[in-house]
Length: 401
Image (cartoon, rainbow, N blue to C red):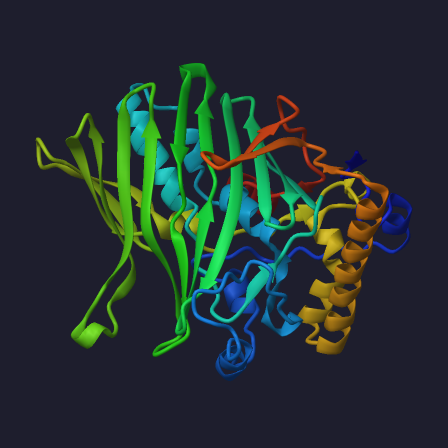
């Protein structure tokens, strides 16, 4: 068997010429969407899909750097958790009753919805690529545990609040003539350990419309359930249409919280604005999520301990490509990206010729027709990371000093 430690760069090579690039997260205001404004890509996108048949699976499609944002998919998954202003995750463990904790979980799940950028996509992570970041007491670790098909595992722990996250993400993008729809399969678990509660949830789909009006939307249904309390929630991400289907708001959410088919609360609002919870018995409403405070003007991660960075860290694996994209040196970006892809193909040929089976370093990986891909972390907790995200309180303290 072959360990995931053998990935592209060696530790010695990393130390000699380490290029670390951390870019702003996708945020409601500012962030990467404001700083990384790609050229007008519509014509290029149309030419890219010209020879692709509708219904085709785009999982293995290799994009030129012009279509890439300077960030790996692992980083995007991680940012959903560690890049946030209001700590909605810790609130999940603060509720005094199961219904209070469940509504907090619903609010936290909404906070993971981030604006996407039309026309650009993150890098497809290489096999064994990792991303390790800490924010306060929360330590987050991701690993690319499969490349074909792409499967990402995530483990996060907050020992102070007795919180654990275990995810297994398997995106499947398909082309439908005038749009690309990316479904994200896999189990997402939030465990509130001191209450013995396990919350399972799925993800909305990302719809990239090419024609008639280019745009990106989150669509589809999300279910959240806690078997221990018997509570469930259904949330629908949808678009409210205006005249002839044009215009309207594409960031609406609507749903309910219920137990044994009896509705307790109705959910209504916009994931980029506010989301309210209405008690169906009393008619009283309360705001449970405010996007501007949660995901507006998010802080960019920074390297606290360069020596602690792994050779497999996303920011190192793709550092030179990201630097070239930010400099708009497209020839250099193509060269660096081609080098990474060729190195991965070479390593795969070596494994095949030696009869070696690649094994993830941080997760056990299983697959079945009934359950799909499932991941379980090898270690009980995630250690502190060399990359950190300052909490809003820490930012204020730095300004005062």
